[in-house]
Amino acid sequence: MKKSEIADDTLRAKVKKLQVSGFPPLFVSVEKAQEQLNPDQTATFQEFYQGVLNHQKLENNGEASEADLLALRSLAQKAVMAKLLGIQIVRDVALNFGAIPDPKYNWKYFTDPLGNGEILCWTCGSQILCKNVIDSIHFKNMRAPGAGGGEVRGRSVPYCPKCDPKPQGGIVYE
Ligand SMILES: [Zn+2]
Image (tube, rainbow, N blue to C red; front, top):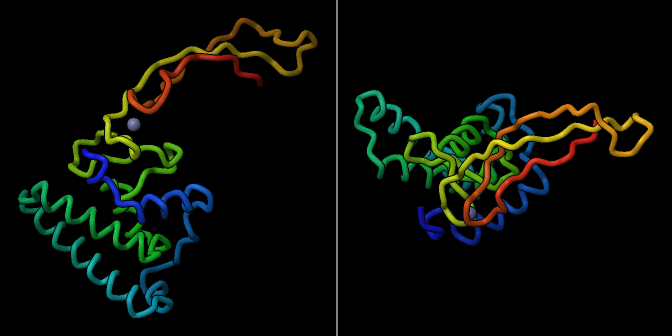
C-alpha cells in the first residue's frame, strides 16, 4: 500500500494523539452511545453502520471486492475522525480493516484491509516481517550485577524492513 493511500495528514495527526491518550472509554451499548452523539456524529455513524451491513451482505454472498473492503476502511476512518472510537463496532472495524494502526503493535502497524491477515507499516506501507531473537535472562536479586543462571528465552519480534532496525536479542532483567 502506498503511503498516501494509508492515511491523510489529518488522520495521521489524530493517530498521534491516540498514541498518547489511548482509546476513549467504551460505551456500554450502541444505544447508549447514540444518546450522546451530536447530529454530525449520528450521521457519520449511520453511514458507517450502513457500510458495515452492506459489506456483510457482500461477504456472505462471496462478492466482497477490494474496492468494497477499501470503502469500508474509509468509512471507518471517517468514524475515527468523528470521534466514534468509543463505540465497539467502530473500534473493531477500524482495527480489523486497518483504518488505524493497532495499539498491540505500539500504534506502528496496521492490518491489511484486503483481508489476507498481513500486517503493514503505518509509516511506509511495507509488509511487516518477524524475527526470532534470543534474550539472556539476568536476575535482579543476584548479588553480582549482570549475574544470571545462563537462562535464555526466545521471542518473535515484528519489524518494518524499511523503518525499524533489525530486532536483536538482549539482556532481560527479572
Ligand atoms: Zn515502514
